[in-house]
Length: 126
Image (cartoon, rainbow, N blue to C red):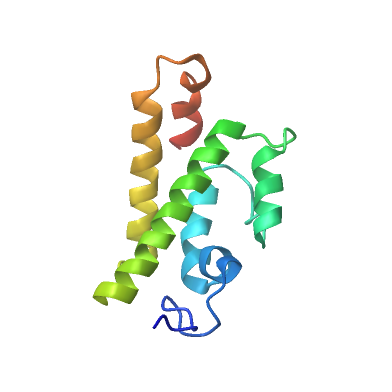
């Protein structure tokens, strides 16, 4: 039986938006990741806002970089949720953010010969 409370903060019901966006643990991870993309604060608070933010052409960071960062963050937050739930093993938000940085960097490096990836690394590494 899966518990209904969030295993990352134990403070709210586990919903998609809570677990991946508004949980204090997830929020801290997002703050570290979003900092790399240069907005002053987290620009979304629910799933639909996040999808709109990814697609917005008016934002200074490239769309492909936003997609990579969001995909990696969602993946690592879900992986952490499962790690806590199944193994009772907690990894801190800063460590998870470093894993995300590395994964996005490695993805860009592996595809750097493709035109849309050629200038992304300078946008990602501050």
